[in-house]
Image (cartoon, rainbow over all chains, first blue to last red):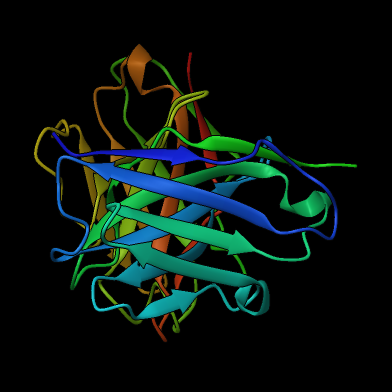
Length: 119
Length: 110
């Protein structure tokens, strides 16, 4: 059974870098799926952050592109999110998710992790 | 890119049918057959309910159906049940390898 689990600090200071990891269990991350990050500010809607393919290709939300990096560590079966220069507006539940190459939807999601930006 | 437009809330009684709309533009919803719908219960992760406008994943009730006309996609839930009460989000491919979500709709089962 494939599962995704987000991990990382729950509190980040303004102007610092938010770093999260998604651990994939039950399936090789280097196979024909792609992996994405989506966030949801408290009480608000979903926002796609970006996706990474097994080839290493990355695609980002244009509104976040200058601050986002998504990478894969195949040796650990993990992929990661880095978001620089965070502000209170980046406070959200961050979800990692899986999509099938050639499609544009996420069929499996992690439980999500809340990241609060505050001094 | 602006978020796709959804009604903030809809409601219906058990057994009734409801429809949630998702309006985009000719650059996203209207240009690709790539709209998906997600159901989210409070405190839970989203769950895929419809993909590629009209397709239903294995295990999703056939009470859920998707359709599209022009720049507006729709999710219809028939035979409304108490367990359907949740937030619903549409999502569309928006070109240039990007995705765009709607603002979400809160479904209340009366």
